[in-house]
Length: 311
Image (cartoon, rainbow, N blue to C red; front, side, top):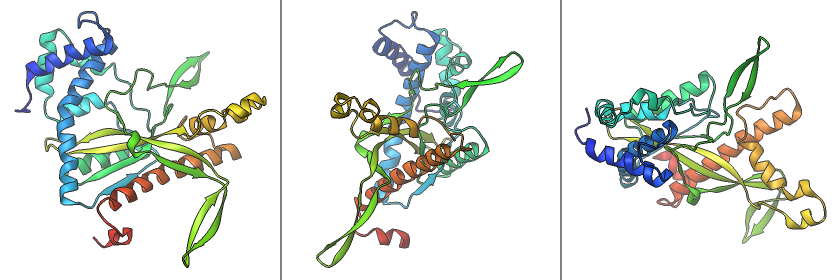
């Protein structure tokens, strides 16, 4: 039981979410719209503890775990979050009074297509455990467009089709463009000597902008909310007008295509060279972005990154 949960406030929040997000009354809302409204209402309950958790971490200057994984098989967020804030009975009762079935609402949520196997489930369990045990931690991965697939049977055979899990949006994620990082691919490194100190400079590279999306990872019944940070890729320069005017249409959208390809699919087929190269780019992409952010965060309060290993 969550003693701080206010049932009437929650019900008002659901009604207001439907009105403000979809310009509809609660009676006119589709099942997917009701799910979105309920998810955002639950997010409202979570958000204060999410902020407070990280304020406490910053105040105590805690050492933080960064768990990097190519996949996180988190499952459906709404039901899991409701259980972990210990408010399932109260929320179920509130929705019953509004004429909705919580189980039906939960079925509107697609599985987050951020993983498809044991590795992803193990990573998700680690994050849940870290939050429940009160350890400061981030999960870091990629915001895949198509992480899993839908199965269809055609003429007696299995056919795989893309699962566009983000087509209706993800109500629990928060886009954090202020923490974006540039990730550079290829090129070469040259040495510049400045005041007797060698500086290594990368030139001739292609680059994309890594933009993080944060998802709450809630400890069970302890008011701790850690973060799963998944990185999306965006082009640095979205469109090259000069190339387009010269008729080089592929060159005009080269940066956009590079960014799109990196986050398109979990584990691209790597039985050919292009697939092997793309998988390596995916790994480098989110590791580079995560390490850049971790170093910058540490240096906000410390002047020497080498001291981080001694704390």
